[in-house]
Length: 260
View 1: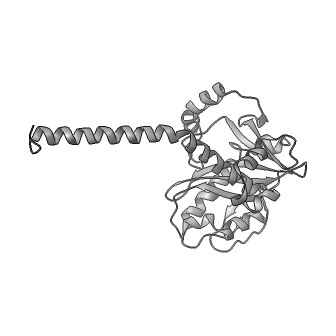
View 2 (view 1 turned 90 degrees about the vertical axis):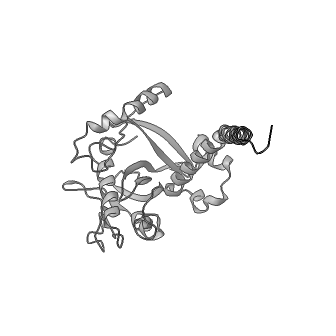
């Protein structure tokens, strides 16, 4: 067969494509477990970052074994305990993998059941069984860490909010996933913005959830943090997210029931 013939060229190109696709597919399959582990470790590091444990000071120095020990070793005086709560009742529940999978399949339907004006986080997925984290420091219960999700200007904001043990104040906020504009909305990742939350902000006021990202400088230091310059809509997204997750559809029943 001539090397210049159309059939040879097409056959050669097809062979290259098949070999490359097999290589890429094989690499994806072989790396899937490692990618899942890395994603899990990243989530755990973000939880640790707002847990304010001694280990929170230098996350880069934590080994995989040390991280897993914080989440799995029930004898460790510094540890993080994962719980599940029923959002509808605010009570801690025991759920198995089958229940969690079924809940995941129904999350879009549940989100549609929330009135638009009340869905301030603009969620498209809203689960009944929500994982939360109880933090122990020096053997003493010190705070909760709650997952929070909401819409920013360009993206879905995903993070964790820390709440003091009394359930009255947010004392930390971090994001592990977002696509906001660097230098503008992306400043939700800045030390300044996260530091404002770490000072402690009272969750509830006379009219319910009072947490807010101000437009400009915060006027109510009890409930507000300074706004983000040039990123009002991202700030509004954070406000809506916090309002939802600490309101009647989020963790309010759990906190007002006395927690766990």
